[in-house]
Length: 129
Image 1 (cartoon, rainbow, N blue to C red):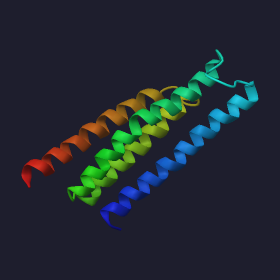
Image 2: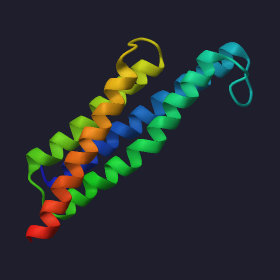
Image 3: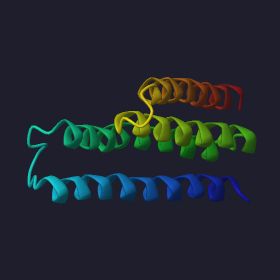
Image 4: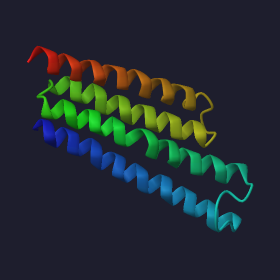
Protein backbone atom coordinates (compact mmCIF):
# COMPACT_ATOMS: atom_id res chain seq x y z
CA UNK A 1 0.00 0.00 0.00
CA UNK A 2 1.41 3.40 -0.98
CA UNK A 3 1.41 6.39 1.36
CA UNK A 4 -1.37 7.97 -0.67
CA UNK A 5 -3.47 4.80 -0.49
CA UNK A 6 -3.01 4.87 3.29
CA UNK A 7 -4.18 8.48 3.43
CA UNK A 8 -7.08 7.70 1.08
CA UNK A 9 -8.25 4.87 3.34
CA UNK A 10 -8.42 7.22 6.33
CA UNK A 11 -10.24 9.82 4.23
CA UNK A 12 -12.77 7.14 3.20
CA UNK A 13 -13.34 6.22 6.84
CA UNK A 14 -14.04 9.85 7.73
CA UNK A 15 -16.41 10.24 4.78
CA UNK A 16 -18.43 7.32 6.13
CA UNK A 17 -18.31 8.67 9.68
CA UNK A 18 -19.56 12.04 8.42
CA UNK A 19 -22.53 10.32 6.78
CA UNK A 20 -23.31 8.46 10.03
CA UNK A 21 -23.22 11.67 12.08
CA UNK A 22 -25.44 13.43 9.54
CA UNK A 23 -27.86 10.50 9.56
CA UNK A 24 -28.12 10.60 13.36
CA UNK A 25 -28.98 14.31 13.20
CA UNK A 26 -31.63 13.62 10.57
CA UNK A 27 -33.17 10.80 12.58
CA UNK A 28 -33.37 13.02 15.65
CA UNK A 29 -34.93 15.84 13.61
CA UNK A 30 -37.61 13.49 12.33
CA UNK A 31 -38.27 11.84 15.70
CA UNK A 32 -38.56 15.17 17.53
CA UNK A 33 -40.08 17.17 14.68
CA UNK A 34 -37.30 19.78 14.73
CA UNK A 35 -36.97 21.49 11.37
CA UNK A 36 -34.21 24.04 12.03
CA UNK A 37 -31.59 24.48 14.72
CA UNK A 38 -31.76 22.42 17.89
CA UNK A 39 -35.34 23.32 18.89
CA UNK A 40 -34.15 23.75 22.47
CA UNK A 41 -33.68 19.99 22.71
CA UNK A 42 -30.48 18.88 24.52
CA UNK A 43 -30.20 15.63 22.52
CA UNK A 44 -30.50 17.54 19.25
CA UNK A 45 -27.89 20.06 20.36
CA UNK A 46 -25.58 17.21 21.33
CA UNK A 47 -25.89 15.60 17.89
CA UNK A 48 -25.37 18.91 16.10
CA UNK A 49 -22.24 19.61 18.16
CA UNK A 50 -20.89 16.09 17.62
CA UNK A 51 -21.06 16.70 13.88
CA UNK A 52 -19.83 20.27 14.25
CA UNK A 53 -16.79 19.22 16.25
CA UNK A 54 -16.09 16.51 13.70
CA UNK A 55 -16.30 19.11 10.92
CA UNK A 56 -14.00 21.48 12.80
CA UNK A 57 -11.23 19.00 13.55
CA UNK A 58 -11.12 16.32 10.87
CA UNK A 59 -10.17 18.55 7.91
CA UNK A 60 -7.03 19.94 9.60
CA UNK A 61 -6.11 16.46 10.79
CA UNK A 62 -6.42 15.10 7.26
CA UNK A 63 -4.36 18.01 5.90
CA UNK A 64 -1.63 16.99 8.32
CA UNK A 65 -1.88 13.41 7.10
CA UNK A 66 -1.65 14.54 3.45
CA UNK A 67 1.35 16.77 4.26
CA UNK A 68 3.08 13.81 5.91
CA UNK A 69 2.47 11.68 2.81
CA UNK A 70 3.78 14.44 0.54
CA UNK A 71 6.94 14.62 2.63
CA UNK A 72 7.40 10.82 2.45
CA UNK A 73 6.87 10.26 6.16
CA UNK A 74 7.27 6.65 7.30
CA UNK A 75 4.25 4.41 6.92
CA UNK A 76 4.12 3.81 10.68
CA UNK A 77 3.85 7.58 11.28
CA UNK A 78 0.94 7.83 8.84
CA UNK A 79 -0.86 5.05 10.68
CA UNK A 80 -0.16 6.60 14.09
CA UNK A 81 -1.71 9.85 12.87
CA UNK A 82 -4.58 8.18 11.02
CA UNK A 83 -5.47 5.87 13.88
CA UNK A 84 -5.11 8.67 16.41
CA UNK A 85 -7.55 10.81 14.43
CA UNK A 86 -10.02 7.94 14.05
CA UNK A 87 -9.80 6.95 17.72
CA UNK A 88 -10.16 10.54 18.90
CA UNK A 89 -13.14 11.34 16.72
CA UNK A 90 -14.96 8.10 17.59
CA UNK A 91 -14.36 8.62 21.32
CA UNK A 92 -15.51 12.24 21.11
CA UNK A 93 -18.67 11.32 19.20
CA UNK A 94 -19.53 8.61 21.72
CA UNK A 95 -19.03 11.12 24.51
CA UNK A 96 -21.34 13.61 22.81
CA UNK A 97 -24.00 10.95 22.43
CA UNK A 98 -23.79 10.23 26.15
CA UNK A 99 -22.84 6.60 25.60
CA UNK A 100 -19.42 7.13 27.13
CA UNK A 101 -19.14 10.24 29.28
CA UNK A 102 -15.33 10.39 29.30
CA UNK A 103 -15.29 10.12 25.51
CA UNK A 104 -15.29 13.87 24.93
CA UNK A 105 -12.19 14.35 27.07
CA UNK A 106 -10.42 11.29 25.60
CA UNK A 107 -11.32 12.38 22.07
CA UNK A 108 -10.14 15.94 22.59
CA UNK A 109 -6.91 14.82 24.23
CA UNK A 110 -6.41 12.28 21.44
CA UNK A 111 -6.79 14.99 18.81
CA UNK A 112 -4.37 17.33 20.60
CA UNK A 113 -1.73 14.61 21.01
CA UNK A 114 -2.18 13.41 17.42
CA UNK A 115 -1.90 16.99 16.14
CA UNK A 116 1.28 17.56 18.12
CA UNK A 117 2.76 14.30 16.80
CA UNK A 118 1.77 15.19 13.22
CA UNK A 119 3.24 18.68 13.50
CA UNK A 120 6.44 17.20 14.90
CA UNK A 121 6.79 14.72 12.04
CA UNK A 122 6.10 17.42 9.45
CA UNK A 123 8.58 19.85 10.96
CA UNK A 124 11.20 17.12 11.31
CA UNK A 125 10.78 16.15 7.65
CA UNK A 126 10.88 19.77 6.49
CA UNK A 127 13.96 20.77 8.44
CA UNK A 128 15.99 17.58 7.97
CA UNK A 129 15.53 17.18 4.22
